[in-house]
Amino acid sequence: MPYETVLQVGSPRSRVSETARRLAELSLSAQDGAHLGAETDLLTALGVSRPTLRQAAKIVEADRLIAVRKGQGGGFFATRPSATDVIRAPARFLRLNGATLEHVHAVTRLIAAEAAALAARSTDETLRTALRAHRDEVARVAPGEDSPEAIILLETRLARLLSAMSGNPAIGLFMEIGYTFGRDEQNIRFYQDPEDRERARNLQVQLCTAILDGDGEIARVLTARRTAMIAEWLSGQMPKSKP
Image (cartoon, rainbow, N blue to C red; front, side, top):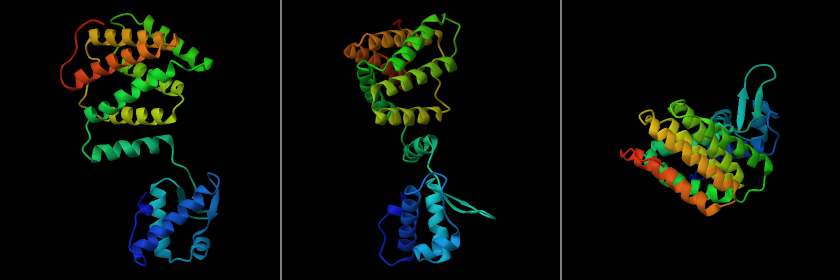
């Protein structure tokens, strides 16, 4: 976070940074939506000038940890970043630092394989039932009756199911970052060919079956095939072979 940057002690920026840190801590120690105080209250509590408080508030507000409301009943309120805020920030960071979808996929393909293997160990009947229903839905799709958008939705749903079944929240977070990054790539077009869509559906059905059978090794192999297909597309070598 910006307010954690080490700055020269005693400088105006260090005072703003320290005030931002204290504001963030104040928010995190309170319930979401709690009133932290009016501006005058915080000026006294934190012992800082109005310009310092306002600069610090902008930093913490940008991190979605406080909300500043004006007028009667206003003041500083504790808030929490949403899942979208948390996910979009690293996706934006990657883009600003020159990352490409190939870079992101090189990492998420490893995470996807681990998610599939862990999902095969899941005993959560609610999630297993959801995966079974997903598999059956995919299996019912007839060739030529789908679309690239429909397949992408099915792929995203499956990834989220496997992340949940893995029992590892970090997997879900990194997979979501990858999907968020990918959705922003307007020049990439997946699943345009009906044969590619059929291949993707068949691999989804096989993967779901392996996981439901508790076969983590086969789940890894099938996930590797699915991610290799994406890697071929990204490199411009669109696969045409049947599964």
